[in-house]
Length: 258
Image (cartoon, rainbow, N blue to C red; front, side, top):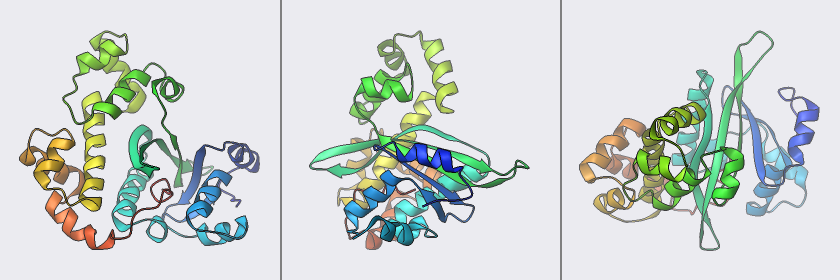
């Protein structure tokens, strides 16, 4: 799949990355181009006799055609932030389960601009997040901190402890983390917890209180307040709105298709 929105040599280069899913979308969220890894992942979950069949199915479609509604809404919210000129950098998120193992990804999204500097779409990549050693390649100096957040998001995590395991002073850690991720460490952690909670609301029948505690919130009230601030719905409203649309399990490819 090619597009005028991405130079052919860059498209070819991205096709050489087997573990990185890459895409370009227009302002309306329609896929203009995806790399070969994206196509292969799509075919794994939606059997295709030939690769071009996946191309024909994906091109011009939106996340609402490829993913459950609650995920598509999150992806569209991301796109709107990027279309406003913001970047999503090194976001750690859980995207699903594979053979009983939790799957985590690192996702980045940036605006696509034309020759006059006008934003005409979005581009993104997502790839599996491995142990701390492999996270270092994505966010040099923060691999241990990201790995700790990933493993212990349900517990209290202080900036001082994250700085310690990163071998930095507290002040240096907070300053450099914000420069790298455009978020404070605690806001990054809160967004991670809220993403995990949104999945739990869809794919489990756990009580709101249990989800709050398992995702690292002090109590249900704190959880509800933060959740509503992020998603413009209370956890209960979110579950009631999306649950009927999420009865079919999400495929492994659904979450990365952003």
